[in-house]
Each structure stands twice: as C-alpha cells, then as structure tokens.
Length: 550
Ligand code: TEU
Ligand code: CA
Image 1 (cartoon, rainbow, N blue to C red):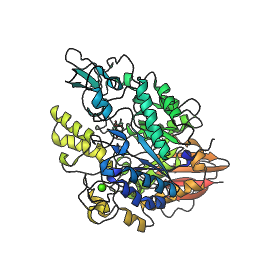
Image 2: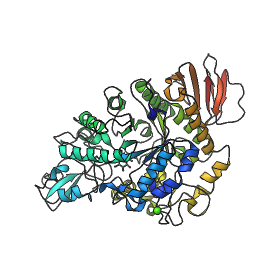
Image 3: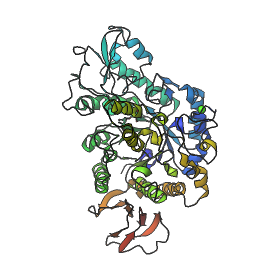
Image 4: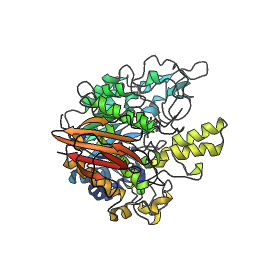
C-alpha cells in the first residue's frame, strides 16, 4: 500500500472560538492556539485542522465568510496566523484549513455587488431566479431553515442558500467563480498550509435545471443539489489548483452513500484523499439530526465494516465519531454516567485501530460530554435556534423540543475546552461566549495529565502505538464474528504483523470466542488485570483490547 504522510497522521480538530482565549473577551483566539501547541505535542497529534478563521459576521460561526484573505477580528490578525503556522511547523506538525466555498456570507463583497442589479458582473456568482407567482423558484429546502430561497426586494428576485439566508450558494458553473476559488487556494498554499478540509464540497455542482425535488422530505431537492452532474470536473479543478504540493484533502460529503464516496476518494480516479462521511452518525437519527433514535450496535458495526472493506486498497477512510456538528461521542455512543472512562477509552480504541486517519475533536481526548443547558437562551448555534423556532411554530411542546436539543445540538461539542478546575475552566479570564459544561471540575486537562489512568493518557498511548507499529495504519481489515450483537472485533494485517482488536461496544458483560490462531500479546487495553488472553473471553462493560502478534 502506498505510503503517504496523511495516512499516518493523527488529526486534531480545533474549534478556535472554544479552544483558548488569551485577551479576556471570552472568545478563543489564534494566540490561544499558539499557547497550547505544547499540549498538542504532548498528546502526540501531528496535524491540526482549524475550523474557519476567516473574516465573518458569524451567522454560522465562521462558515459564512466575508473575506477569504483575512482573519476574523475576534481571532486575531494575519500576523497571528503567520506566527501560528510557523510555530506549528517548528514543532514538526502540520496545519490544514477549512475551505468553505459552496457558499459565502451575504456580507462578502461579491454578494453585496451581486444583489445590486440584474446585470452587474457579480450577478452570476450566485443563483438568482425569478419567483413562481410569488413563491420561491423551486421546492428545495435548506439544511438550516425552511426554503432554500430568499426573496430580495432590490431586484425582485430570489437567491439560493442551502444553509442560512446569510450563506448564499456560489454558482460554480460560472468559470469566474472557479478562478476565484483557485486564487483563494493558492493564497493559503503560498503561506504554507498543508491541506484543506473542504466544507460540503459535494454540493458545489447543482443540476442546471434547478428542478423541483421529487420528495417533500426536509431536504427536498437533494437529488438536484448533491453530487451534481459536474461534481467530478469541479473536484478535479480543485485538485489541480493544489499544484504539486504534497498536501492533504478531506472533503465533507453530505448526502453521499458509500458507493458515491468511494468514487470521490478512489486513489486512481477520485480527487479527494478522504471524505467525512455521515452514515454512522445518522444511524441513531430519524427524520432529521434532532430526532434521536436508539442506537443499534449491530447496525453500527456493519456500517464501519462495510466502509472498511469497500475502501481497503481503493481509497482511504476519515475516521471520526465527533466534530463540531455532532454531539459528544462519549455521551452518544458510550455512557457518560456509569462508564465514562471505560466507554471513552473503548471509543478511542475504535478510532485509532480501524484503517484510515483518526480525527480527534478537541476535548474528546479528556472525555468531554454533552451539556444539559437549562434553557434555549443558553444555546448559540444557528441550526439549533432555528430548529427551536420552527418546532415551536409547528406547535410542539417547548420542553420536548429542548429535550431533543439537549441530546442532539451541535453546541454540545462547542462548549469551551476544559483546561483546569479554576474559573472558566482555564479557558478565559472572562465569561465565555457559550457556557462551560459544569462538569469541568472533574473533567479537565490538568487533572488528566496527572492521572496515569486517565482518558487523556490512554489517547497518548494509542497515538504513540500508531506511530510505532505500521500495521495500525496500513494493515488490511477483516471482521471477526460479524454476527456478534455487542462485540466489534477485527484483524489488521501488514507485512507479517497482525493486530486483533476486540471491543465490547455495550455496557453489558458478554463473552467472546477468540479465533483459533494464537491471539498474541496485549498491546493496550482499558481494564487492568488481563493475563491470559485465549479461548473464551469474559468481557466487561465497554472493554477494549488490542493484541499483536509479529
Ligand atoms: O456542515 C454540513 C452539514 O450538513 C451539517 O451542517 C449537518 O447537516 C448538521 O450539522 C447536522 O448535524 C458543514 C459544517 O461542518 C457546518 O458547521 C456548517 O454549518 C455547514 O457546513 C455550513 O457551512
Ligand atoms: Ca479572545
């Protein structure tokens, strides 16, 4: 298998607004990231993905960009950015940026000019259409609020926005738009960044007819705006814009099944190194991302296994269970009350032992959990607030809406990083932009650094094992006992060494029959006292173990 640096990388995702505030305004900043780089070296990660840090009115926390070549005022200046990048490189680490080019902010100068008149040179940078007898041009729905179209009085036409009305979609069919994007990519590459995470990148080609969606689901129109007719051409354009720098690309691909993603990441014919896929984070959701369903462990196993097998040798997996759009993994796939440490470390083991590149969301490495905010006033995320408003208007009971929000809101992952048990969890001198999870007294970096058995120290061991044994990275994948209802077990093999991973995904005790072959030496496990690992194992709640034979 071809060796590439980004296959060996362990990526750490920083949500700058919530990472570390250094100037006492309650908002994390670039200087805060610089201050914590030694912590990241200590953890052992080598690649940082920064959520958007560009100038933005922050309707969607930076995913609405008004200037791609400047830094958001709250985060600092371009000098701070240059300082950060060189500090990252000095430590032998790499930095990848969020490239958000499906849409801009409505406060971007292109859009401001675009909306001025019917015939200005920026008009075709976006999708403007006449209405349909006073109604929107088609029935497409936005991800975040009602119809995907907004009426603009100035020219009496509508513009397309697949996210909020402050995030108008760019028209990639216009070659000028593609050239602008190329310019942005080159600008950041010339600074020396090491790659891009590309936001909703498979939405950039819309079906030219802008036809009505066939179903009336909450994402009506998706068959015409996701994975559109020119998507491969545009992705190739992006890939070519990278030139010959050995950078990493990870595309966020929404509404894309395994076969579709396999084409995007195909090492011969695809244009992305890897893709953030959504199948495993929709298994426990119903009609939308605020509709929780019980998690079917067997379905989760099958899902991981299918992705592993399909991409093995063909493409590369992006491994994640948390990010800034998802609730905290220990609260969602584990048990943050009775088995906090056990389930957080089991999930960490899963993350680092499948084939692919692990992505750690800030705070995950100390087992940060969902937050139970008392009131809707505590929430900040535009998607959450819109959902609340919509459901209230539809007549739902406020307490039942809040209950769903507590479990599913993106703000669960966005509460400030818990550095210590002092004021504001060591995140800031001042009151933070979003409240801190009150459990920071027990869940914080300082305490976990001091405790050899902490979740944090378990992550450090896993990351260093990944560096030591190439089989973690390059090993083939084969599942063992796929029919087991609770245990996910698999073998990884590479150049004569073999890993055997056994994970009890559940909070129940259960037994697992090891395969015939010699099972090997215990490399890492999340319970003490294992000695003889052969035959039938009695697994404890969320028990995880990795055995090696060489
Ligand atoms: O997310 C795309 C996306 O589809 C998610 O918003 C998802 O539908 C939702 O979070 C369900 O939980 C990307 C970014 O990661 C997100 O933060 C942005 O808000 C969005 O694009 C728009 O740029
Ligand atoms: Ca600040």
